[in-house]
Image (cartoon, rainbow, N blue to C red; front, side, top):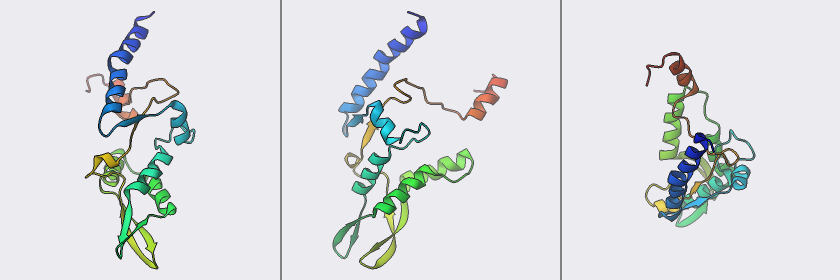
Length: 168
């Protein structure tokens, strides 16, 4: 066995497996997804980072509209619009995109919804910040079962760093 394989196997048993176990027993608990579930949720596209069916279910669960003492759900079209806002960002620089996505996740968005003949902008949130147990948490392996390390810097930065190794 090569040293790179033993490191990878050791890393799996020393950090990845315990981390997955911890996530599953935490409250609220995390759901471990199979690779087939991840592929289905991502519609078979590796560039799709959203688990769309899970996200649609959660958006519907977290968002109810109160009007005249009654509770109403958001329309399926508005739930799809909310997902599109996350999936299809504006063509802006990385810093601006990061800021806009963070704002969207933290603050939610406003969507026009018609209820009993009244159309108004209604607040829709992606995350319940007050009651964490209302959110859904999932974890899985990326890329066909291979564990990949997330890249912490954009590829342009990595290219510059290769030319200038003194950069952090």
